[in-house]
Image (cartoon, rainbow, N blue to C red; front, side, top):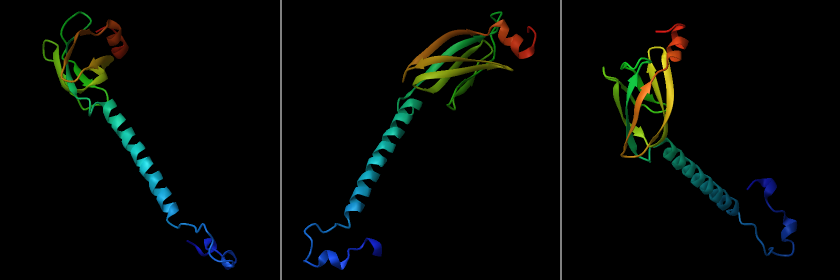
Length: 147
């Protein structure tokens, strides 16, 4: 308590007042507020971890990547916002393992061409997206002419 906040002698002329200020009251209020903020922050952290899939588990995604003519592509596939990626084999087949559960954005790229698709991944399950075929306009946009 600072000197300015201390009681004056005038307050004690007729004896001690019935309601003596409790100096630890402010500290208790501060501790309660701090504890409440800590619980809110912890709750927000848990919600965020659930959203990014750290607590929700992981699954797998499989598929085949094809060029506009239906030929297999050795495309690169990654999960946006996660360190999960794979490269399709010579037949265009790929398997992404360890994909966080939830709605995820897959980025499928081949040279200067890339597309993004949304996929629902369930923990412990494998999602087959089937054939992913690039369109002719994807290659025209990237190189300015048909491939």
